[in-house]
Length: 331
Image (cartoon, rainbow, N blue to C red):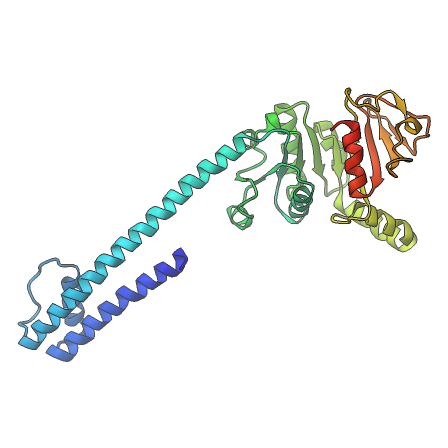
């Protein structure tokens, strides 16, 4: 039985013994309900008070049976109840200690502020991408609903202490999807001050907030309503384009995936043109774009485009082909 079921069982057990003793004294000695209940309680608790009324021989025999069975039951209930409480406290202590150790090991991870509808979708994508992440959520009920294998901290994400507990100084990125734009703005300000190199993506609900979030330090701002409206319009106006994008970016699609791969200095394709690398010819991968280290984006690069150190290749292909490209790049 789980702890809740065990507690219910103990309550039913002790209640049954008290009722049995009360009904027994009422039947054997013809006492009233309250006198019988009182006699049962002082017998089970072994307080040593005198008898409510003189007992007959049958009453004494019943009292002996009640003491032998009832007191033993009471001791059992107390011992099991104490063990449940102790186990719960120990489990909580060890659980917190285990969580702290896992958090201490975090590096190059992502912090997700808020576990609402958008937060859940983001976490699911993080899990499928095997990306390390930690959640910060204010609501204790929401924290209790999160899978135990997922790292989560209960606390207000707008507070520096909570972000520090999530090891923001070692984090790679932060995503703020809290319910209000004001809270997201506070998170961006705090996060940028704690880690100037952090990549920050924030959610914006109302018009005009995007510029404020960018000024506060966000690298990118996403408006779910704006993107949703565009998606609906494109779905009706350009259905084939939308179907292709969804096919290429949908999680779990093993036929085609889009991935970004950063070129390191030690990579063998550094300072080589695309046609010299054999990415298209040998691996069958399409390079959709090249994001330069300066931030400039080169869409549909030519075969003569030269790959430089620090560039990010936006590639499209099958999963095994993309893995081969990662190996080629030197990741």
